[in-house]
Amino acid sequence: MIEAKGICKSFRQWDGSTFTALSDVSLIIEDGQLAVIAGENGSGKSLLMKILAGLEKPSAGAVTSTQPIGLVFQDADAQILADTVIEDVKFSLRNRKDMKKDEILEKARQALCSVGLESKENNPSHMLSGGEKRRLAIASVIALDRRTLILDEPYSNLDYPGVKSVNALIEKLKTEGFTILILTHELEKCLGLADRFLILSKGTLVFDGNPQQAIEENLESWGIRRPTDGGDIKSLVWR
Image 1 (tube, one colour):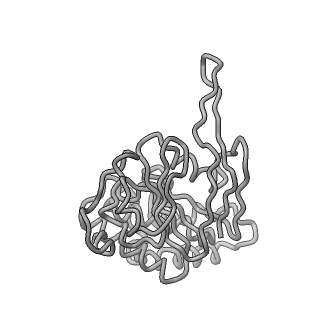
Image 2 (tube, rainbow, N blue to C red):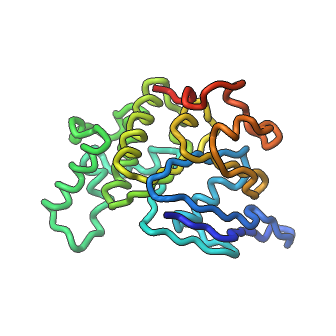
């Protein structure tokens, strides 16, 4: 479970004034849930996720989690650090002083298997497709025993097959009990997978509830493009 209480984040600007990027944000994500988080550019969603993952400290408030959180960045290439697929996953494990080389290799192979890249372990990392690079970035996080994943704009620059492959992996991980938070503008690609839908606007959490209920709200007032004019929310997923 992830619990955030009263999260605020302010920055001092060049002229000495203070800009408040997040204001009194509180939420609870239960273990095993899949939550989609949306908001227009500048709403604070990426900053909030960095705070949840421990990469940023809030100005006020606190975050508690029952398990470590892994963050997968929007640009998958920024998370790929080695020449081959297997070496990239092993790279994330090299600081594990309690693991021998053969144990690191086995752990890396297990992670690749979990994302469907076991047949490509010796392939050059930069030659992977966009969807495969996204899955490799996820594998590197899973190898660190992260069961809670934050995926920042996971469909960015992906074609239709790439989106389908990422969604297939997300559904697989959800059935395996992973807790998943997806930050995205592209609701039509994944909202049908969600148990929860959260909306940030101007640093404030303005909606937290059932995805079907959200479609009945005035999404445009929060700068969010409506993905459907009605119907079953479960249809909003690319498969």
